[in-house]
Length: 165
Image (cartoon, rainbow, N blue to C red; front, side):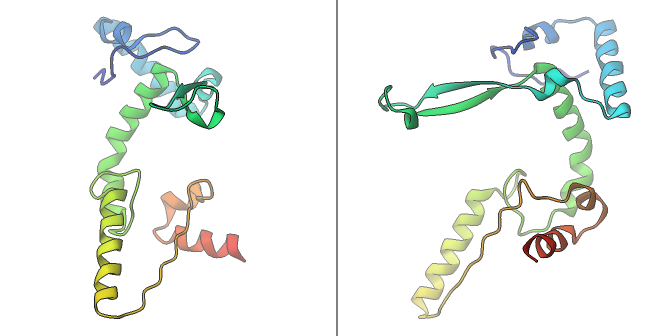
C-alpha cells in the first residue's frame, strides 16, 4: 500500500499520525487495505471520518482581535485521507477524459488560474476590438446531482435547468 501522506501533520481525535502509517509492516498494510475494501463495498464510512476538528489560524499581518483575521482549517482523519487518495488515484484515469475542456477547478491542467487568464485575455481582445462581452458564472459545488454525474455526460446542464425552474 502506497502511504502517500504528508508527515508532520496534526492528527485528529483518532490520534493516528501519518508517520505511524508509513512505518507499519506489510501485514498491517494488508489489514488496512481489507478495512478500506469493506468500507468501499458497504458504502458505510466510519462516523469519525465524517467529523473534522476545525481550528482558526491567524492570517499573516492581521489583528488577532478581529474574527475576520482568521481562516478556518479542517483537520481530518489520516486514514480517511489515505483512502480518498487511493480512490482518487484509481478513478482519475477514468474520469479525467470525460471532463469537458471548459471545466475548471478541482482538477489539474488547466486549473482556475488558467481559466481566469483565458477570460481576461478574451475580454481584453474584445475591448481592443471595440466589441461587447458578457459572461455568466454558475456555482454547482453543493448542487451537483451526484447520481447523474456518473451516469450521464450532460447531467450538469439538466441539474441546472431543474434547479432554476
